[in-house]
Image 1 (cartoon, rainbow over the protein chains, first blue to last red):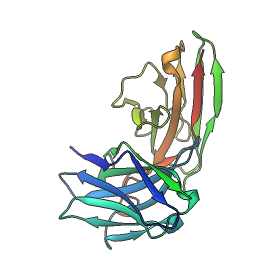
Image 2 (cartoon, one colour; image 1 turned 90 degrees about the horizontal axis):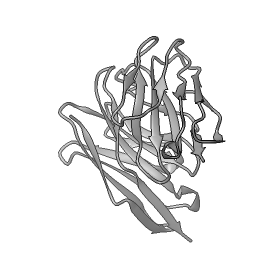
Image 3 (cartoon, rainbow over the protein chains, first blue to last red; image 1 turned 90 degrees about the vertical axis):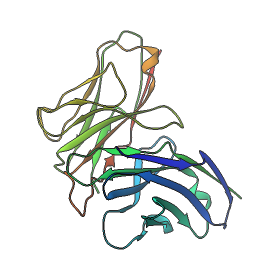
Length: 114
Length: 116
């Protein structure tokens, strides 16, 4: 079985400050890990993903995440928040194998304060 | 990135009406999904398909039904809509997982259903 825990359903940061959204996962096999962003009234857009190789993954809009196996974490960061980053962010995990389902976290709503 | 199209984007219908939410993808993905999401809430998988003539129920029980007659098309139907069905419905697709794709799911823009 696999699961995802996103710590903090709401996170507020000031414009220009560091963004840190936390995600911990549970998986019995090496995981695939994802971060998605959802703007109001939109579907989910893939920000970045880790499948294999380098553990620091860079995504769109200046976001990056680091896969830490020992901590079972995949936290999302951005050095400097922009107003346009205000959205809901979802972490997801999947096991290797073509028929494995993807499990989503409950989401973290990011507020950026001007 | 996959192109997934959902229609209608917004729909308001009366109780008891039958509705079909359309979903099409142009990337030839074998796997397709329907998620239900209330505003600001988590995603719930309600249906998925591994390919043509394959449909499975998801983690959340739903009164809706789906069909997969063509690879690119995965419509969702509610035979008799009720106010409790008011929600956003997200269609998605993915390749069979490989080391590079990693079961990456691509989403459509969503269909907002309001039943009055």
